[in-house]
Length: 225
Length: 245
Image (cartoon, rainbow over all chains, first blue to last red; front, top):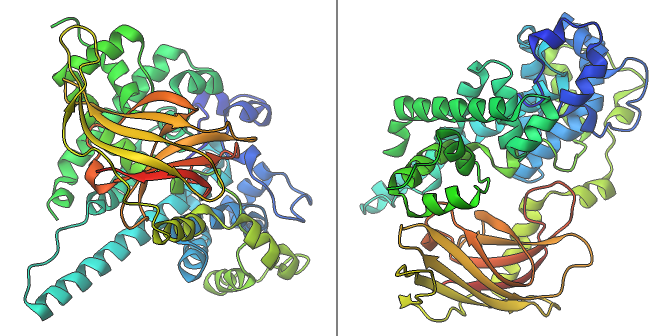
C-alpha cells in the first residue's frame, strides 16, 4: 500500500514519527474532516485500530473516509456504487485489522490500498456483468457476440497486479507505489526515500519484471477472455 | 546495433520517464528495446491510473455510509455524535465532485455540439523531416478547434517513426493559462476513456505515444487546462479539440 516505505532499520529506530514525515506518502497529506484534530495522533489511531479499539474505527472514519470516498467517487461517480466501496473499505479493514501492522506503514495508506482493491474488484464485477449481459443479448438476437472491449484485459490485470503488489516486500513495494500512484520519477523517489538512485532504479526494474511475470503466468486467460 | 539500453533504463522508460539523448535515440531505433519497454508497460498502464491515486479531492461520504458500517461491524462507539463526524454538505460535495462525472458531461456536451469530426488529411503522408535517410509517416491528423470561449486552436498529427514508435506532433496556438498548465489527451469516441499524452505549451511539440496504444480507439485529441492541484485526471476544462482521421 502506498506509503509503507519504512524499512526495518527505521522501524526499530527510536523516533519513528520524525522519520515518517520523510518516508510516509499519504498520512501527512490527508485532509482531515472537520473535528478530526481531537486527541490521539494518526499513529496512535493506527495502533488502537490494529488492537481492535472500536473508538479507533470511528476516528479512522472521521479522518480518512473523505479521502477513501473521494477515490471511490472518482472511480464510479457519486452515488450508491461509490458509497458501497467506501463502506466495504472500512468494514473489511475492520474485520481484517489483524492484517494491518502499524510498524509497516500509516493506517491511511493501508486504507487507501484496501480501497484500490475494492475499486478493482468492483470494476471486475461490473465487467463480468456487462459481458454476461452482452452474451445474453447476443443469444437473444442470434448474432455474434460483440468484440471484447479493450478494457477487459486491464480490468483483470488490475486485480491480479494489486494482489501481486501485496506480496512484495519493502522497500520495493513502497518504491513502485510511489512511481505508480504518486507519479514520482525515480530521482524524486530517491529523494523522498533517501535511498541511492541506483538502488531505486534496480528495485523498479525487478518489480516491473516481477509484475510482468505474474501477468504472463496468470494473466494470459484475461487476454483471451 | 549499438549498445542496448540498460534494463533499468528500459524500466524507467516503461514508467514514462524520458531517457537521456543517446539512450532515447537508441530506443527509438531498436526493436528489441522497444518491445521490452512495451512488455514492462502493461502493468504500468493497468495500475498507474488516476483512480488509484490517493491525492484526489476528498469527498465526505453521506451519513448513511457510517450507519451501514456501524451495523456491519457491530461498532457502537460514536464520539461526539457521528452526524458531526460525517457532515452532509451538499455545497462541499458539489465543489469537490471529481472529474469523471463532470468531465464526461462536459465532453459529451461538447461532442454533441458538433465539435468532433473535423479531421483533415487522412492517409499516409511522407514527411521526411528527420535526420539522414530516416523518414516519418503521418498516419492521422486532426484540426483542433477552440471550445467554448477559448481562442486556442491548432493541428495534431500522429506520426510514425521508422522503428514503429509513434509521436503526437502538436502545433498549438493558445494563450498560456492564467493558472495551471495545458495537457493533451486522446479520448475514445464514447468520451469515457482517455489517455493523457503529456503536458504542452503553445508552439510545436512532439509527445511520444505509448507503444501499444490503439490510436483508432482514442481518436479525439483534446487540450485541457489543468490546475496544479495534484489531481492527475482531466479537469473537464477543455480549450481545443479535434478528431483524428
